[in-house]
Structure formats: C-alpha cells, structure tokens
Length: 106
Image (cartoon, rainbow, N blue to C red; front, side, top):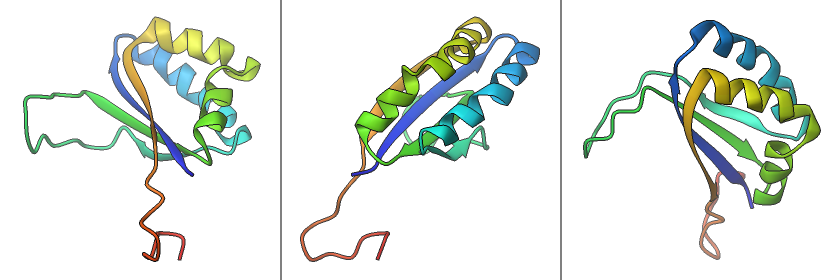
C-alpha cells in the first residue's frame, strides 16, 4: 500500500535550504520515492492553517518511507534541513480502495 510523507516547511535560511534540496532529491529517488508536491502555491480552504511550504512524497510503503528517512544517504541532508528550516512531518498510509472498486492504478 502506498504511503505518503507530508511536510510543512518554514524556511529560515533560503540559501542553505537550496543546498538541501539539491541533495535530498537523489536520496528520495534511491528509495523509490517521488515528489507529488514540492512547494507549489497553497490556498487555505477551511480553518486557520497557514503553511508556508508543503512537500508531499510518495513511497511504495510506510516501511520504505521510514527506510528513506533514516538512511545513511539522507543523514547529512536531514541535518541541513533541520538547520535551514522548521518542519512538521507526518507519515500517512494511502487508501487501498474498497473491494471491487476501481483504484488509481486501474
């Protein structure tokens, strides 16, 4: 079942964060992940949430997403992200669909 990492990001060091972005993408790809959302325009439709930047990553499973987050290759980029931005991150499992229903892969 697919899993998604959703990150809310408040960049505090734009130059340093660009360095992070240059390194992070290769590690995501190595673990089979892909960017679904990477900092596009946001619009609040309900509530008072005012995210500055949202990133959504898709992985084949929650286990694979955790492997990426904790892998050796991502250790230094992760430290860079912590230095250059304030982040909130969650992992959410995707919807497998109801029995007999059509899913995105069909």
